[in-house]
View 1 (spheres, rainbow, N blue to C red):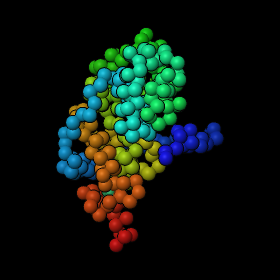
View 2 (view 1 turned 135 degrees about the horizontal axis):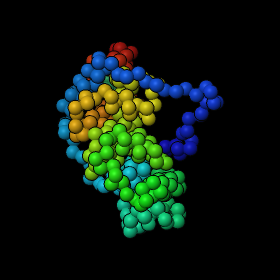
View 3 (view 1 turned 90 degrees about the vertical axis):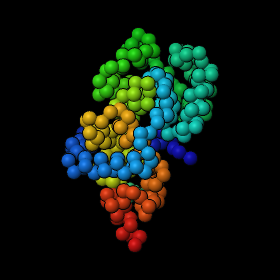
View 4 (view 1 turned 120 degrees about the vertical axis):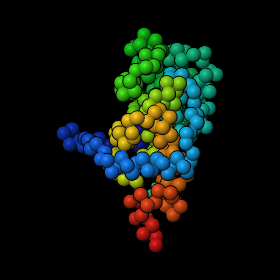
Length: 257
Ligand code: SF4
């Protein structure tokens, strides 16, 4: 059973000793390896990958907020629960929190997600004068990501998901836990780099001329590799198409030889 987010919070070091992660810009060799990894994984899983959502940005934001540490099937049920229980997102924002919590009971931690979702919707209303994200259309992705990530409850992954998965179809790279683990094992990012700051480093590895579909493909194939081969426990290095590029895989194979 997954831990409640409050149980997973990392201890905060005393003020003045907090470690600030400042990853260096990726070098040319790492960028070349990242491209080769992308090429092989696209051959393995098939690119271009069809977009799985075509939701308006606000719908995608709600969907992403519900999906945190929740199986896709359960977050989809929670999203449908909200849609069935309320006529629009304004009604979700203004409802008693218990009613929202009931509607998303299918997601993990509805008691935390219901008030968090309402806080996010209220913040958008305050900043935009209504529940409206139309200003993100045509905005440069970096600025749009920054605006989204400034909302309460929205981090780099949710911001990138809204930009990439919604009808905005932006050039943004969400990094989930599978993607993050695979990138660490392959040496694309340092082991110590948390998933939040990993977004910028992994995005910087991709060619600037790639379009939104190619960046989305990269997210999808890295995630699929984590789901289907580079498992959290017992990665299948022996059948991995990346094993000659992977320091972790080579070390594991040597140990088991
Ligand atoms: S070689 Fe092993 S550790 Fe490396 S990416 Fe493949 S499955 Fe993961």
